[in-house]
Length: 337
Picture 1 (tube, rainbow, N blue to C red):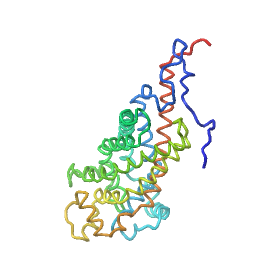
Picture 2 (cartoon, helix red, strand yellow):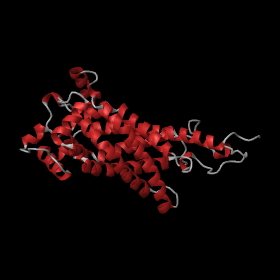
Picture 3 (cartoon, one colour):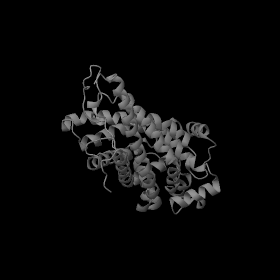
Picture 4 (cartoon, rainbow, N blue to C red):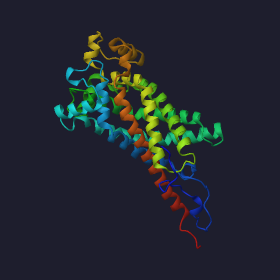
């Protein structure tokens, strides 16, 4: 599909924003090339809103993915497709069951994504200056994504543990506080970061591929880096699909570490709590062979494509609007024509 230059495309034409003396303000160019105007607050605000919407809109599919990645699911929780899973969960467990754990996800997603996007933009800009003299650099994009992921996961990992425990079939926890309290009391605070190394091992390549794919798609669909909603949606969806499919084996291991499936672990005589990425890999293979590493890949891709498209389109929209408002305030009223 060809993306044409139409009225939807918007830029911040700096020549039209006059300073107080009637002259064009400094920093002519589009909104993405204005580091002086796109402040840290703008990136953090846009990132927080994008993160919350990303996780909220597609949350029911994320619940299905967690269940489909179960290595030895209850016979009543074996699903053939995402649609069939959602239909059965709603019919047998209630309309709101696919949303269980959404509250902790929203609490974590706001600050995690605020740090994530702000760090990404800052590191990308800094490294691009060094590597490509300010031009777009795929290496800078990938490295910026990796650094941003370390901060993001440090905030999000505890929320992921609680979320996935509450998403599982026959989850024993009454509510969010009961889940947090039970984990802390029976397994200790370390349980909230038991999967952190695996999460990083998954998300660092995920985000590296994700950001490089997004920026590569932007080069093709939106070479002038204007605000173009269609290109942001398509680039985000492609980035989400590719990175999700590639990193599914690591996501299966992360889910096992987060949920500590008692039935599955007991079946191969593992007592206590499973820890470490290497142990998780060995356990997944023992329970289901190579195929087990790709459990839930359909749900994962279906979840990530629209989620990433939403995240990028919302982030770019808020960045555009907030940057434009800030620039207009700084420029002051236009002088006489």
